[in-house]
Image (cartoon, rainbow, N blue to C red; front, side, top):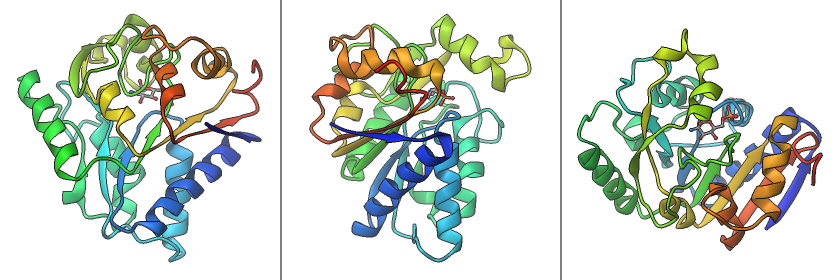
Length: 241
Ligand code: GLP
């Protein structure tokens, strides 16, 4: 594991964007596994800035996102498809047809998840998977207890995740209770993993993730076993380590 300490959120975002850019420059046909949440927003902004300067080309890049709320349409401003469009895809020259997010509108979970696993396989797997960290150690929407061997599946969100994510919705009742998420197996099969973590609120869980026992109770702890893991965390997130 390569652990990079960043000064603050902006520094973490810049360092993460650097790693993503390097991947795209080295392999223009790269498959990027992308993430949502507040943590990657700054990295996406930085990528857009560099793209506008002419330093980056996404024309041949493919992306597969980690997860999507079940039941939300791409036009819903809380859907992860909408998030990706507004934070990154609408601002760079990526071919939208080559950007994939699980289909939140497919009511048949088995169908939605099998189709997504097939997409990941058909694009040749993930070169670089970007990850944020949930307050309870989740990655994607793999909540504590999720079996490590799973591929894309439908999850019931935990109360703690619903509470954490309600800040984006008008009221807590609007937060979907289920989501489609890549499984730990899909994430572990990525050739490189980049975990980004910011803020004091994540400090204790980050310590458990990196140095605690590898256990499904802390889903991200499995990353200790990945052979190409880079963690970029800011000082606040590293305050317990
Ligand atoms: C959501 C997403 C995760 C993300 C997590 C943390 O639950 N499904 O992929 O990592 O939130 O979000 P934030 O970065 O806002 O703390």
